[in-house]
Length: 203
Image 1 (cartoon, rainbow, N blue to C red):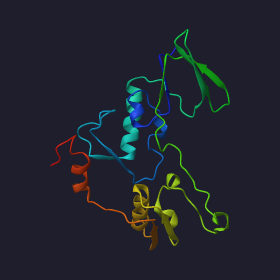
Image 2: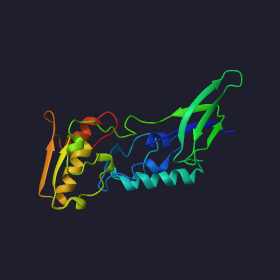
Image 3: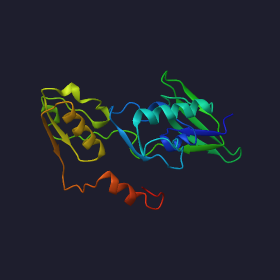
């Protein structure tokens, strides 16, 4: 009987028990994580850069899971769960890709689903009439697929800036970023000491 059942996980959840296949490995190829290397949840090796590339993080997560012999079920959905006060354990129902529903009875149940685990695709008016291709940032991978195209990137977050830069670096001549309001831009060298002043000494 398992002692702990972990449902979903990113890097923080990996510190408990890791779901490796969604640990940034399927994102756009030039993604650099915004999580610093010195966080206390599954800290990266000291030799790593401050912000690590996605493939490096994904490989590290898979190594961690293998080294600790963690029993990980990928592509498994949490259905529901009930806590038995008399037995002091959970009855957790999970569904595998085959459709089979299995029951686990752990003493502890940990949720690490994160805030942004699934993409939110807006239902914008006129989308169905658009003749071009619409791609959510979670599905974007590389700019060379858009050579000869005119591209509009909607939004101005980290992903949108990464995508716009990648498109330009791949020779897309017409790239426009659309945003609702102004964006405060700070250099990496200045942003790091400001954001992590209480945690580290930046030189």
